[in-house]
Length: 78
Image 1: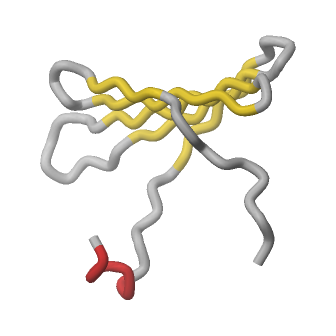
Image 2 (image 1 turned 180 degrees about the vertical axis):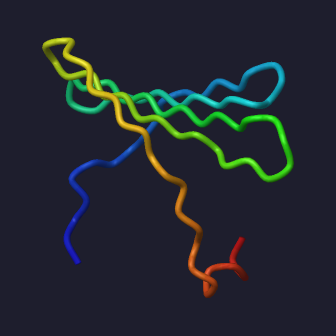
C-alpha cells in the first residue's frame, strides 16, 4: 500500500435549503476541488455526483462520477 498523494483537510461544505444538493470545496497545493452531490426527487433515484478541478492556471476539468456501493463487510461499521 502506498502513501496517499492527496490528503483532504479543512475545506467547506454547503447544503441546499431543500437538502437535495451538497457541495464540498477544498484546496490542495494551489488546486481547487469541488465535489457536488445532487439527489433527484423520487424514491428510487440515483444521486448525481460531479467533480470539478481547477488548476493553478484556472483551467477547469469536470467529471461525472458514479456512487459505488460499500462492500457488504463494511455494512456493520456504518
